[in-house]
Image: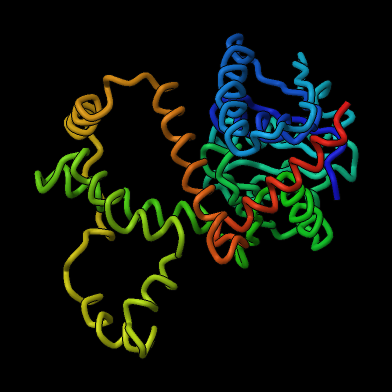
Length: 335
């Protein structure tokens, strides 16, 4: 199943990333965002995405889709068969925008929300066609990282879940359907646990922002790029595998190693501490420079994974091979 015409509502960091992924797959996109700077911001994200894709597919990309800016939500979604909403994380705003999308979109158009934590049933109460709303939660940068968490609400039909899986897969993504509706889904719950513990470690003076980032990127961050948590721990169990790992390390779960059930007070002192250390770590780079470094690193890592397993690829690399092949095929038919 292919997307014929897409609409994006919201052109911030995530919304612009969706625009870039769609456009570089040759899909026309109509965008609505009331921000007067939306065009500039999207253009800058799109320029970064082009640079990354040129490294992935040096032989040439498909003919780009067009970006058209709409003056209303209704204008943006009227002819789209796929609509991605990426407005800020406020339920009242989600209700207002999704109701407007629902009122003007074709009844069979899929609506995906980029929310990071709101349950789809809570958002769907504003819709006349709640069966076609799914959470489609991506990870930044959307144009490079392939995972999208698909979450259906109480009234989302299996047909639209299947449609969502097919449509997101058609633009090179890895859709994973979350089995039960839950706030923050799976990826963000894992990140929240690490983020919360990290704030404690920095607040208590045990480590700094830069040191903590180094601990991640020089150790388990590298492991997680090619194997997930459980496959990594299966290896750690030796020849006896996961059962031995659980028996060996299970008892430590009762030890007071972490503060995951507690939250440091979020005050100006903590903000100043984190922000100040972050400035020391990365203040010499602009955000666009950091994005370029990040994208180049991600392309290189996925490219390396694509060469593994006898050329079949491993993890994100296997998906990368399929995606690059699809982009090359599309490039051969461009006019």
